Image (cartoon, rainbow, N blue to C red):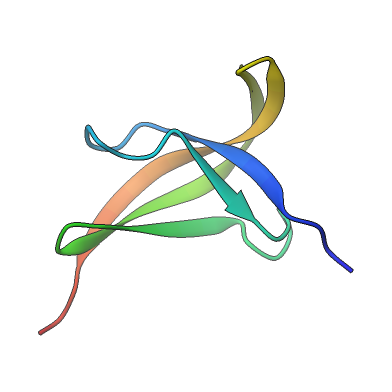
Length: 69
């Protein structure tokens, strides 16, 4: 059974959360974060960085989409 993994989000607009939780790196190579009237999309960068004393996988910002009305 997968156990959630905290990942670091890098880049993107100001106000993006610094970390996010995914089920696994394999099942979620991309994440989308709801922000305002759209989604910020992040992709696993195959790298790791230290955050609050913990080594986390890094997801880099790739693009933004808007919610359809």
